[in-house]
Structure formats: C-alpha cells, structure tokens
Amino acid sequence: MSGYEPLAPALTACGHEGFTGELRIAGSPGGTFHFRDGLVVAVESPGAPGPEALLLRSGRVSGEQWAELVRESGGSRWPATALVAHGYAGAAQLRVVCSMALHDAAFAIVAGRVEGCERALVAEPFAQVPVGEQPARLLREAARKLAAVAGLPHPVRPDRDRPVPASGGRGGNPSALRLELLAHADGRRTARDLSFRTGRGVYTVTVEVARMLAEGLLELPGTPAPLPVLRMSPDGQGVRRRPPPAEPVPPTPPAGTELPRRKPGGFFRIRNGIPK
Image (cartoon, rainbow, N blue to C red):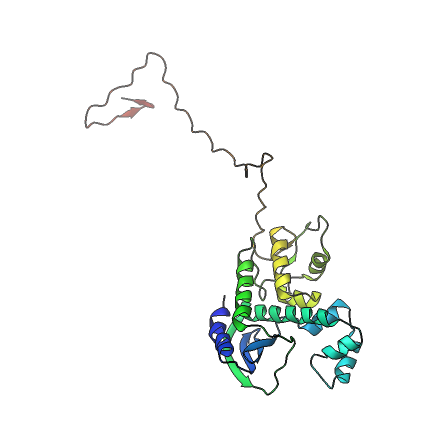
C-alpha cells in the first residue's frame, strides 16, 4: 500500500486537531482532502472521476446544461442547488453521487504514490457532502479496498496495468459495464483511464477488470495468460486430482535363479547385467 503509510499520520492529525482547510497530496495521482472541523467534506483527485463527471457520463445532464448551471450559480464548482431546482437530480441522489466520488478519490490517492502532504488554511472549504467523514474511517475504507483488490486471483494496479480484449473471449452474456470495458480496453488505457471513459468509479472498474482477466475476457500484453479456474467434481467432494503414477514393479528373476550373497564389506560386480 504505497500511499497508506505517509497519508495515515497526516490525515489522523487533521482529524484530531479539528483542522479546517485543505490537505494537498503531492504524488501520482495526488489530490486534495478538504476538511471542515476535522471532518473530510470533499476529496478531489485527477486519478478519479468527480461527481460532475459521473453525472455527465450518466446522461442526466449535458455539457451545455452543466455550463449553464455553473454560470447560474456564480461559478460554483458544485451547483447542487441549481441541479435540484432544474430537476436534473434529486437531493438524495446528489448526496449518494458525492459520497461515492469522495470515497473513490480517496481510494485512488491511497492506491497511488504519495510524495508529500501540505496543509493550506481556507476560510470556507470546498464541500460536496453536508456531513463530513471521519478521516480515520475514510482511510480504513480505502485500505480495505486495496486489500480486496490484492486478494483477487488476478490483482490489477489501477494506474499501471493496461488490458486488451482476449481473443475469443466474448462468450456468455456480458453486462453493460463489461461491454464498455471490452470496447475501450486498447492496451493504452489503465483501469483508472477506463473509469473516466465509462463514468464509473476507479475501484469498481479495477475490480471488474481483475475479474475479467481471471476469466480470460481480458489479458495484459506481455504477461502469461491466467490459469483456468478449477472446477468442482460432480459429487461435490472438491477438485478432482489426477492420481500419482504407479511406481514400476521390479522384474521377477527366472525360476531357479539364486541371487548371490554379498560378503560383509564387499561389493557386487556387474557383468552382462548379472550380479557376480
């Protein structure tokens, strides 16, 4: 967990001190944790789609409509009131979208490389959720997701691995997300890139890519193909294993043949394949 160790003390200290302001994370992808009275009220990262990207990709609002809402809200980065007033989304829906984006951005930062943390005091922090998250809880959740990805049969690094569709791997009835991933996975896009392309969370896409790799629907160029999944035996007693080969039985000497006895401390001499 490359980003966990340097982030843990910085986030914990902000929570204990009731910090209000920004905790700016340098690294790849890096990002910013926004605090109000020690609670995280927003997380932004270039490594994860924000709530506006999720809304635009969902088709609830177009790019032109979003620009108009921002102008109407005086340049607000998150025109939640205008979104609800114009009927583009309900207040409860916006809270869910913002919470998902906040957790996903935290996961992207923790999953990446952290080079440093710096505080910046602001009078009114940028907020996307009305009730903030405890920084320790947010960090534990990101670490749990990282551990879940690492425990999959074919783990994926969201910022490095670049999958491509496997030849002959479009069998079955794939979900809408899988069809999108198969369409956009071209060997240049990482799971993080695919999350922006599909308008889904980085964690969701990373897990789905890992599962598709394990099932042979995707593959990573230059790496061995995943091993086939072992199937249970029909009787439900587990995986059938091939019995070990039988050891060869030594030949029986002809009748009437008496093997010579070895003198104590002596050795057999072999002539024409017969001990002497």
